[in-house]
Length: 185
Image (cartoon, rainbow, N blue to C red; front, side, top):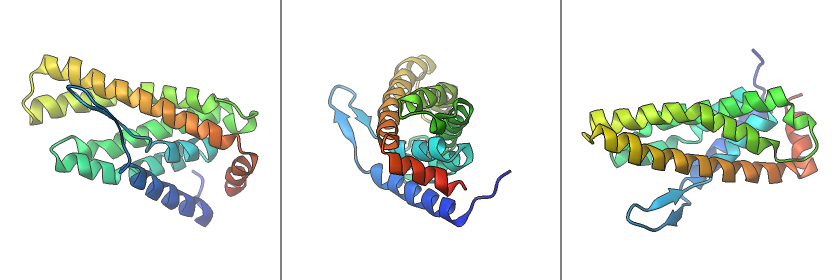
């Protein structure tokens, strides 16, 4: 296992803080059940793709603590969010490492990596939502499995794609890409 140097730890702290701050900003689509979108994932996707799965997973877990606390304070499944985000960012980083995304020309490869990460995380989301809604909240199983889960998983995929597009655009800036490569040295 590779060691995390001071520069890497500092960047993890900064990006986790940015992710927590981004949790305050929401895009709301009104409706009978309003849908709220956030782009809190892009800081840990940036580190997952740019530095590696461990760095992304740590940033994902720490970077979602404020959002987890907020959701938990309203009776939601907040304590499970950092674990899900660590899975999402870790898998995104593993796929990016296997595909050698940082060695490729600027592209939208991070979007593919993040979508694969979300596909892996989705069963975890479904289990958590069904457990929390049925066991803790007393919701009917069918309602939680179909309506709530599809809304949450669908929203998660959209957020992941938007956040990954932001990462792709950021990695198209050559000096940002070089900085991430140099931090790993």
